[in-house]
Image (cartoon, rainbow, N blue to C red; front, side, top):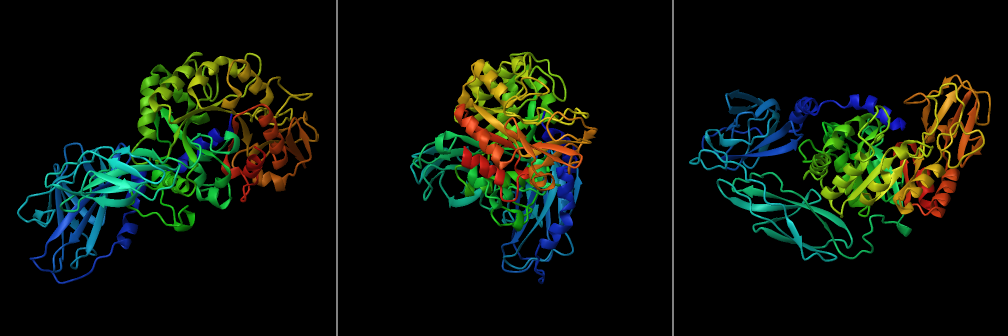
Length: 621
């Protein structure tokens, strides 16, 4: 069990529906729009350009930009277009939008109707459905500025680029042409979401790259009215050179992985940028982004606002640049993209499931191929395909009980992992968080972890949360014992027992990562200093009873002793157990001696502001 999943259920309520948040932003957006007053004239010409700026599956966000391309001022504007049946505007800002059947009309507000020559203004809206506008007119003429042509559609998406002639510093990209009713003028080439070139042909060679570095490319077409169409699919490219391409880019190939929670940006106020300011990003090799949902037999978005819509201010952003309301990707995903640009060897996996959402794996196990396809489609979505290097499955627990009990059978986990590997291919990372129950007849024996091991890069063995204040009266015991000790409440509930059982069934040691919790578990009403004392209930915690971050405990209840390779603390009537830099050093030495593949931890925000626990993992592994 992991407290993080219980916390996720409560904190997820903080995320408002995406459409609601976007609609509320209208007045603020209006304040940011500049319109220059000028004298009206009937001879002015203008263009109207449409772009879909967001797409969350059940709806989307659209934007029209009106530009005065003439030499005289415009005093007002009206944009009209047709949507196919089933597509409609649900809310709008910076324009008054009305409809008659499938025909839509947008008129300027009182503050943004005047446009001087060369000036432009935008208005936006939330929509439902998936259609694109057609038969656009602006002030009765064509949206491309030609008054004799009744409308103009934006271009289609070009074909997904193909990479060739990859060197240490360059790559050649080619793609199939887009189509447009008035003709395609040129193409924008985007590297990691940023435009690097505009070309008139369907190929481009990008130069000046860094050796041994991952890049992602998409292409957008622009028509003769400067309307930009949707982006193509993304192609991932790794330049040659730059050392090993091992997925574990650290000395000795050891994995140093931390979980970043999507909900940490709320009450905890822990952003991706904190990985930079704490120094942690430079000391890890991988990040698991938690969590995506598992529902209806498919992978699904966990929190759309946190994932790809929240606008971060300049001081919150990895790049130091504030998000804008109309940029194609915001939220944690864009921040992770910026983090990877700063640390090119860092790998990011999207973790699905967790304590709260593991119930969805029962449906997934009924059709593993369909589940794998849904996960691939989501992880490789062109909007953020360059952000993720693979997928992590956190099923708690296959053919056993967690928040709910699963009865999918011993083979279900193996079948799901096999389908994911088949779909994602050999170049992507496919991993799983797994139980550390090494007891006789325990959870390790409930599923075919040995059979599934051939399909995964590694297992994150959750070697923590063995004991806690869910046993309200005790006995007190460390929640992450490395080894057994006299008086341990349950045999087999140790890291050493779990690793030994996995190796005994045939899982290679190099595919096992030791787990570290950046938090403690505690009881209150305790009089005994040593483990094994009685209690009256869970100790108070900042976010949940019986749980507290290391950064708090190190000062509020300092260590008074150690047992089984981990620390405990008795202060007043409270008794806590947690890992420290010293006990982490011991666990890392043990992991190296066992030949394990590395270490992972839950989760970044429990560490100190200067990342001392991450530093202990890095320096000792």
